[in-house]
Length: 141
Ligand SMILES: Nc1ncnc2c1ncn2[C@@H]1O[C@H](COP(=O)(O)OP(=O)(O)OP(=O)(O)O)[C@@H](O)[C@H]1O
Ligand SMILES: [Mg+2]
Image 1 (cartoon, helix red, strand yellow):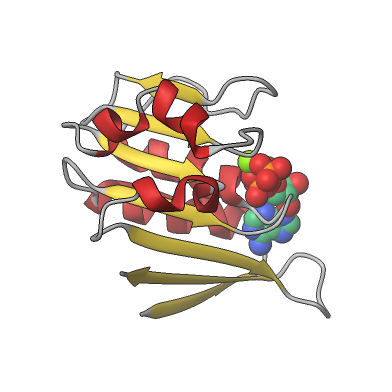
Image 2: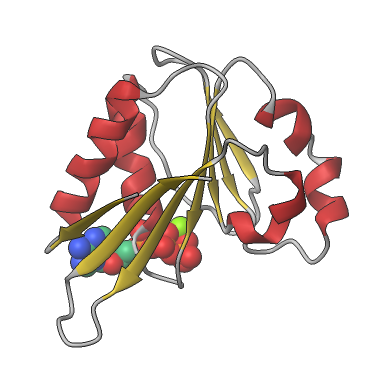
């Protein structure tokens, strides 16, 4: 387990980029943390590290965005709005999680039972005392 502390959006994006540069085919990254914690910021850096040029966003009703223009395909999920795990199954989560690209899943706890055993966990929490400070804990199962 590794813990990082970032003091700005830019630092979190840079950390995500480092992980994106190292990512390997078939990996699943589960991002958890409250609304506004910085999951999408991390994802944006991660995509950059993979060489993705298309924009990483979190549109309200899009559960999955595919980015195929990087070094590996990136499957970027945002499961905030699903109510049952069946909705994740319906969009093909399991195929993607076991696919040839890299899965990055915001609100991964919504589909906990579908995550492979070797999922890489990334938990982002705000510092209660300092507005722009985040703790980012990364662990492999
Ligand atoms: N150290 C930091 N790391 C990341 N974001 C930060 C940091 N400090 C401040 N911020 C701000 O926090 C917000 C993080 O937003 P982001 O969309 O990444 O959150 P999220 O975890 O994806 O939320 P959601 O659950 O709504 O998708 C941004 O407005 C960003 O500027
Ligand atoms: Mg987000």
